[in-house]
Length: 124
Image (cartoon, rainbow, N blue to C red; front, side, top):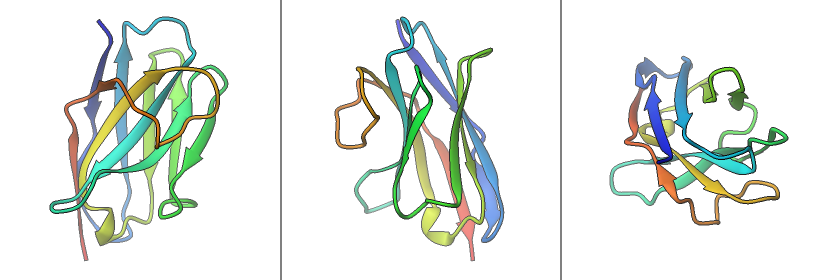
């Protein structure tokens, strides 16, 4: 059974950094994408960054380009989200999710597997 487990959330001041981790297990092969999504209270969930595991191609939401970096470590099959220069609007619950499939990752596609989430709080 495929599983995703997030960690690394916390509270920081604006301008600070956090690194989220998503440990993936029991996935078959490498033709799947992993995305990071977030949801703030009262707002819809939005995609932040995603990566196609087989070739490490990535995609970012405009709101985080230049500040967030998604990466994958083959040795432990963990997907990281490095978040720098955090802003109060980055506040929310962050989830990693995965879906099998070829081609560049996208936030608009349906993701099958979801982690439990990790909270990120950014104060002004």
